[in-house]
Image (tube, rainbow, N blue to C red; front, side, top):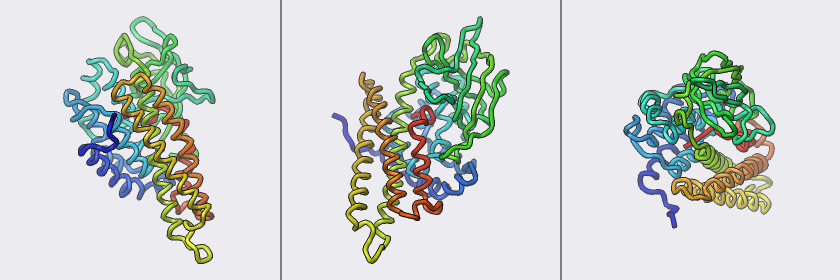
Length: 364
């Protein structure tokens, strides 16, 4: 049986990221959403806290070892501040973590130190495809062997910082399996589209990519010539997004709870109305249930349990539904104020709507 109590190191990490999330990300979230981006200085400040570096071994420029449990604890706190800001700070991990987990020794030595040891850099990954029936296990972006390399063709969407990315980890269907390929910025046949305009996470710059006979070498296949497993990447992403859904929902719940306790309507606090009290109780219950399910999934991934993939899937499925319920009710509890942009609940509801579609946007 595992413990639900964070150890001393994990608690220090939680406290550090909670302060950054609330004092920096939350404070700037509204303006960043309106302007379409967080400042690079703020992103770098979050990077300097060492979220990614603590998951990379010293041999490759980091100062720790990967733990999915620790990662989801930090991801939850980051999303508690703002989902878009958390995803922006964590974007280099989309490239670095798969390399650290599944890359060849040559790839780890060549790629990780230059990414981990310096300032935040826009390394990213192209995962999601612009199709209504997108399936990570049956991608329509294709790769086929061509002599001394591979040829990539297809489309990707929701690619963070793609316009400025130095390197992009692109996932494609190779002979029926999903594999990652490292593509350099400016590669012939790679076209970066305009910044996408979405319902939520507007402060995270996302782009469409088009691949037309893009050539990559055999050495640039993740894991080298023999490739890699895909399940660890998908499972980790699902657990991470579930944790971020919990953090976002916790923020919406606390804001609605405090508003209801403070707001008077006809001489009675909103929170004293039975219907509101029941709503708040159900919101709190669902958040805690999904938090525990996510923690269990993360622990199972760390322990390489055979049921870990299923648990990660269930965590994301449940957390996505929970986030929509909690944020929608937070807007309801604020009444007319919930629809006004000076209150953050409408932003949290818009961001929560995308949780189910944000596969591959975060990984720990």
